[in-house]
Image (cartoon, rainbow, N blue to C red; front, side, top):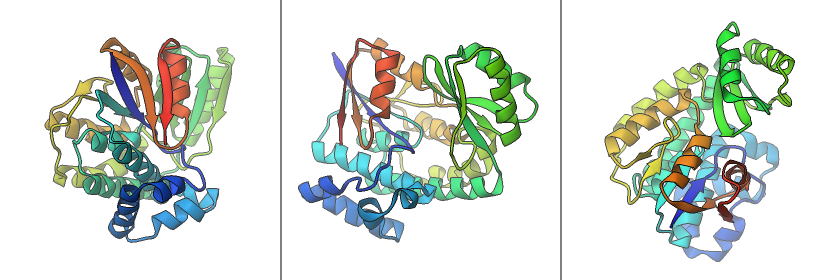
Length: 291
């Protein structure tokens, strides 16, 4: 039986993240120091001593979560059977599987973070968590709502996040409540992630992804855009190009990993969100964390 290593995305950050790892592991210190050099600012100091507000900035959050996750994986010496990452976490998963170098992955994450932050500032948008509704019904409501709003994160059965223009997301929430969903809660996020509103950021990131060196990974990576396992560098690159404007199909990803032999899931990096989702999607699976 196989172990699936999964990597969290934006939102899993916390004050002091990575400090214990830095103190404990000489290899982690090298990675943190290299990250500061690559990024051109003191990420380590912000992670260790910054406020929750400091860590919320997308340009900080994304490299911080990536660094914590990858450093944890490298120091633990994991030999994955299969990997996946939720949104930003896909970049961590690619490094853990050997498809990208640490340096290349961090540079792409930095470009992604800055591009998304600029996009959020230029194109207002929002997201909302929908609890207790069938995916087909949520998709139907989004399609019928004027403006741009789509199902963006299929997090678990009965938990889907929609994303798009502010008025359209609010209108979809109103209709979904009328149709009996348990909750439709607008999230405090900077923009409409994984929706067509991220197209300017996708175009900016695409240039960097096209120039990056991708390698054949040591194991399959189940990618967000189709929830399927990939080992071909050209396919991995293409799917990563599409990720910013496409839904995160996490529910199907977890189910596909189980169908392909995963008996346990290990979340690598900060937080416990993915552990909770795995328990909801496949209640009988063994779940643990590594940070």
